[in-house]
Image 1 (tube, rainbow, N blue to C red):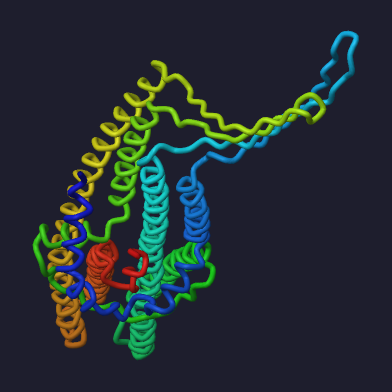
Image 2: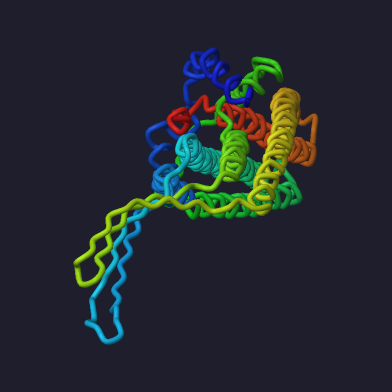
Length: 414
C-alpha cells in the first residue's frame, strides 16, 4: 500500500486553514487577475487539454478492449449423383474478463486521470512561478529606474546651484564640470535601467500576453515565520511535482496486478446457428474457447512488477530532491532578508553621510568632489539595498507560491 498519499491528505486537512489565511501581497497581481492570466497560459491550456484526453482514456481503459464479434459463413454442399444444398453458419462471440480484471481496469483508468490532473496542476504551478519571477523582474527594474530618476533630478538641482555660484564667483569652473559629469553619468544610468525595464516588460508580456505591468510600491520584506519542517510540510501537501510520481507508482502497481491477472487468459463465449442440407437440418449451439497460457504472460507480469520498483525509486528520489530544494529556498529567504536589512542600514548611513557632507560643503568645509563622491556611494548603496529588497521579496513569495498560499492555487488541487 502507498502511505504517501494518505500522509499528504492528512497534512492537507491540518494545514489548509493556515494556507487560507495568507493574503496576496499588494505588490503582486491581484488573485482574480493572476488566475485569469494563468488559466490563459498556453502551457496550462495544453495540460488542461491533455487532462480531458486522459479522462476519455480512463473511461476507455475501464470499459476494456473486449467487443462482440459476429461471424457468418456460407457453403455449397454437392452430393454425387444427388442434389446440391446451400448451407450457412452464423455466430456471435465475445471475450469475457475474469472477475477482478474489470476492477483493475477501473483503477488503471482512475490513476491515468490522476496523473494527468497532477500534470495539469504542475503546469499551473510552474506558470505561477514564471509569472512571479517575470513580474518581480519587471517591477524591480521599474523601481530601480525610479531611484536613478530621483537621483538625476537631484543632480540637475545641484548643477543649477553650482552654476549659480559660479556666476556669482563663489565656485570654480571645475565644480561646474564635475556637476555636469555627474548629471551625464546619471543620464546614462537612467537610459540603461530604462532599457532593462523595457526588456523585463517585454519578457513578461511575451510569456503572459494578457498581463499589464503596473508600478506597485514594493512591500517591506518581513522575517520568515515557520521553520524548514513547516515549509516542507506546507509545500508537500500541495506539490503536484510529487503527485506525478505518486500517481505513476499507483498506476504501475495496478498495471502489475493487471498483468498478473492476465496470466489467466480470458475465455471467449458465443452462440451459433447452423443451417444444413438446404435448411432441412438446423443446429443451435454454444461455444467456449480459451487461449492456452504460455511463458510470455509470466514474463510480462515480471516486467510489470519490475516497473513498479522503478517507479517507487523515482518517487523516493523526487521526494528527497524536493525536501532539499525547499530547505534551500527557506535558507535563501532567511538569508535574503538579513542581507536586505544590512543593505538597507548601509543605504541609510550613506544618505546621512551625504546630508552631512552637503552641509559641510555649504559651510565651505568640504569641496564639491567630496559631495559627489558621497552621492555616488549613496546611489550605489541605494541600488544594492533595492536589489536586496527585490531578492528577499522574491524568495519569500516563491515559498508562498510553492505552498499554494496565494493566488487561490488550491483550485488546482481538486
